[in-house]
Amino acid sequence: MSQHNHDKAPKYDTSKVDDMTLALLYLVSYGDGESMIRAWKSFDWDAMNRLHEQGMIGNPVGKAKSVVMTPEGFKKAKELFHSFFAV
Image (tube, rainbow, N blue to C red; front, top):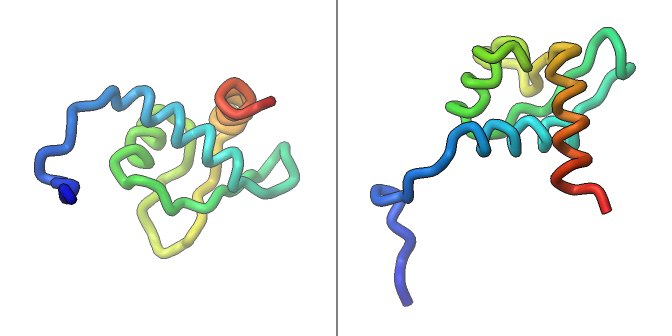
């Protein structure tokens, strides 16, 4: 039985990871759908930081277990979620 070696992880397209992370943030989002949307932030920190740099979410650094999604981020997250996961 082989073991997975994290030190030799394959290279990957970070923009695809960011899109998938944003879509999954939609899945775990809550709020009124307009002014304040929050999402649980238990995702890869590098992806969360990139999404923050892109203006999709508020700063993920802090003690809160959730992060604020920007209106633009929520809209894109919803579109990506439906694109990836809708049946």
